[in-house]
Length: 263
Image (cartoon, rainbow, N blue to C red):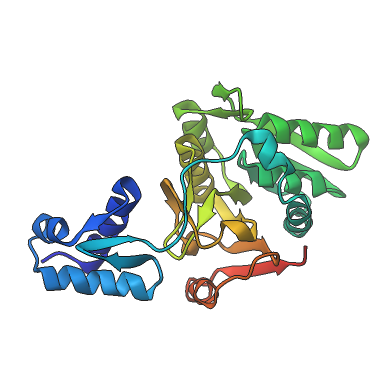
């Protein structure tokens, strides 16, 4: 007998890959009745993840099929990024080991770091390493920077690939700051597969994991899921767009602190 969770995961994956999940195909796949699959879809509808259509289901939330250009992302939501960055950077303590992924939102965290001593920063982002390097030279912070190498993504300015992801396994982090393309009740997801792999490794090696997500990313899905809400100790967002009660309840059930900063 198959588990409902397996069928639900299959339905969501089918929709994300094909734009549609068929009731008949899902029933045949798992050897269950059409009524069983309809109950699965009804449950996903109640969670506001899908909506029913003739013969199956489609996503109820917008789907982020690609990231904007790097420089457009740099310029968007600047006030929100700054407010989130100030809150996130306040979580960094003297003597800690801190990991940053390569998200543009994480650059704001790096820009807001100040007055910390003997901190080890680990990142695969050239831009973030440069921001931190300037702060070291100005005396705002002290410690060291460890840059994770690998194949260089020229457009987005970070190292990627199997080497970068596996290199993270050699480290333990007190706290990691991770970004995403989208986050829903189901998961945090990204359009970039390399970023997914790297961010997943950061989370697994960290005592505390913090997701940085502007409010316009909440309630959406992208192509690759890399974490569930329960994988994060804290999610920091802004108040520009309302956060649904369902999302707040999901964070509470997952014992994930949700911090909403004023932008």
